[in-house]
Length: 330
Ligand SMILES: [Fe+2]
Ligand SMILES: [Fe+2]
Image (cartoon, rainbow, N blue to C red; front, side):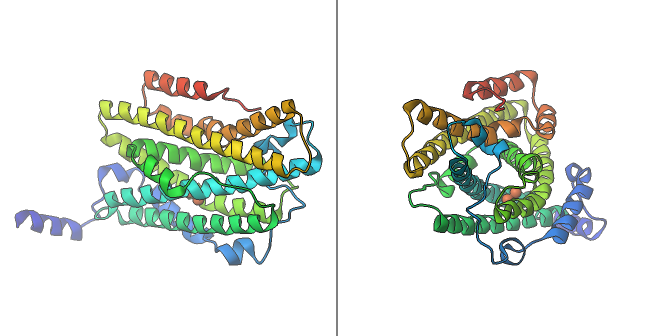
C-alpha cells in the first residue's frame, strides 16, 4: 500500500519524467507541434483528384540511374523510371508495416511516463498507417496506367515478422536509416527534378514533411534503447543490424530482377544479351543505392551510430556493406 501511495503522490506532483527522456523532452514536444501543423490528408492535399502523368518520369535520374544506360531510348528511360518509381512507393508501404508495429510496441515505455513522448509516438504510428494507405492507393493507380505483369514481390507481413524477430536496437537503427534517406532523396533528387509526374512528386513532398518528425523520434528512441543495453547485448544487436541489411539486400535483388524482367518484356523490342545484362546490373545498382548505400552514408546516421558502437563493431558493419558491393553508386 505504501508503494502505491507513494506512486500516487508522485503522479500528482511535478511531471515524473524519467531521466532518459529529460534531454529529449523538448524534441518530443516539437515533433508533436510540427506534426499537428503540417498534417495532411491523402485526397484533399495529395491526390486532389489527379492521376499519374505517364508522359512524365516518376523516379528522378539521380535515384533510378537510367541515364547510365546509353542504349535505351528516352521513352524507354521514362518507362523504366516509372517502374522504379512504382517499386519505390511500394517499398515504403512495405517498410512502414514493421516501422508502425515497432513504434507502437516501444510506445509502451511511455504509457505511464512522459505523455508528450507517448503522443509523439502515437502520431508517428498514425501517420505510418496513413502512408501505407496512400501507397496502396498509388499502386492501384499505377496498375491502371501501366501494362499488366508488374509484380511487387515482398509481402509486408512476412517482412515485418522477420524484421521484428530482431532486437529493438537493430530495428530502430534500420528505421532511422530509412527515414533519413527518405528525406535525403527528396531534397537531393526529387525536389530539384522539374520533369517528374506532378502527382508522384507531390506524394514524396508530403511524405517527406511527416518523415522529418519520424527521424527525430527514431533517434531519441534508439538512444534510449541503447542506454539500456549491456555491451554483450549491443554486440548482438550489431549482428542483428548486419543481418537486417543482408535481408534488405535479398529483397532488393529479387525486386530488381522482377522489375528488369517486366521492363524487358514490355519494352516492345529485343535487346542484345550484353544490353540485358547491363540493364539488370544497373537496376540492381540503383536499388542498392536507393535502399542501402545512400542511407548508410547519411551524416546524421553515421554520427548517431558512431556514438553507440566500438571501432570493431564499426568495422564489422563496414565489411558487411562492402560484401554487398561498392558503396558509391555514382
Ligand atoms: Fe512514412
Ligand atoms: Fe516514417
